[in-house]
Image 1: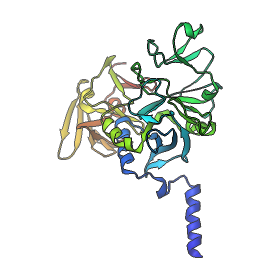
Image 2: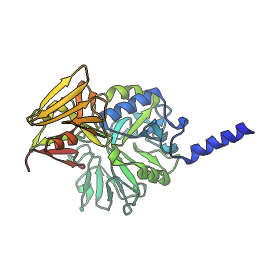
Image 3: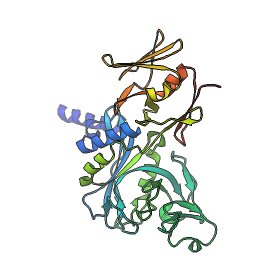
Image 4: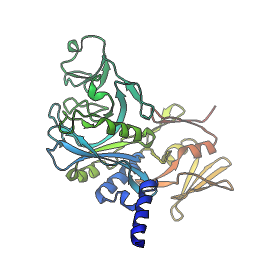
Length: 362
């Protein structure tokens, strides 16, 4: 009887607490490697996985993962979905009725209704003048265009965005920036027409589950969506090495800085290679290999940081920071705002354009 009561108590705790039970933390070695790499390279701590059993199947499962102190935690219950009629493809073509396999950014949300209060993504309410262009001969290919005239006078093929399936949806940023003509277009996550009705290449779920996804997705966590079969994961791991889906620019006194290892965001803080910026600002940067410390000197100011430590020595004072120094691809990455402001520079962040601005003079 005691064993039964203990089991019921543990089960109850797992159901009501926000702390994940062990079974909730994802442990697949393949996905863990992929998730961790995406987190390091892109600062992504929210990931959606859309998977099917094998190529050629249009029924899929959607799972959501978020990085916590315990690892990668399954956030929402698994959801049924449908994809392109002919399943996933790593080599999608326009009109092939396949869904693109790969790793993609999540773009803007949109819909035919007023913006729901729970959506954190940027959102646009569509009208009869909103089209997504899939005409491979048009310069507007794979772009959202507003047009008040007759669309057939301008394009041979297009998607109307004010339709029932797009009552609530979000863009999957496949084949964008730049768009390659013929590689596929208008890839969204939207409301399905039914659990047994495939799409032309999009991912579709029930309206209730689309709402759950849009409530969960947080653009501040650099969310990504991974699509494909289990057999495609290994190729994705190789393909994502050093691929930044959320690039960050640094501009010093209106001049863009060029990096050999790009900046990235970890835990809400922007890290940059220490020498790339601060030596150009007149600081001396010293590296102690044995102690794994970097020291930044400028005039009378001294800042000393240790790799993987949250404690920093600023002159004679010890200060705690919320993100430690890291070594990524052979470069020492440091939190740009903390150091720049300690050195007396002005730092601003444009979240929409993902640009750090540093000014040396007011």
